[in-house]
Image (cartoon, rainbow, N blue to C red; front, side, top):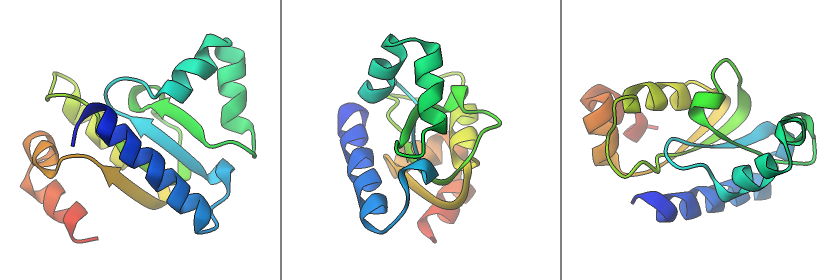
Length: 128
């Protein structure tokens, strides 16, 4: 599962979290490849408006893992939407996996996780 299909699955998982009772302010969808369309639209309104959505309790936040370093949310949906491993793929995976305080949902190809993060990381994710 790559690219837009991965993002579609991630979008569905955001809906599942909201249906389970998570509040929008607790949820973030992070992409490792191309930015999510919602992020692109929000950034088109300016960086102030984009970051205001981070603090808006009524909105799920959409971002890219490299712009989310040092930030966290209770629930993270991580879309591994890179088409192939790149120079910073390992860093992107690590950042994405480490941003959730309570709930992490990873959407992507297990083979990609294994190639980028190694067998131990894949085993850990698959055991959850």
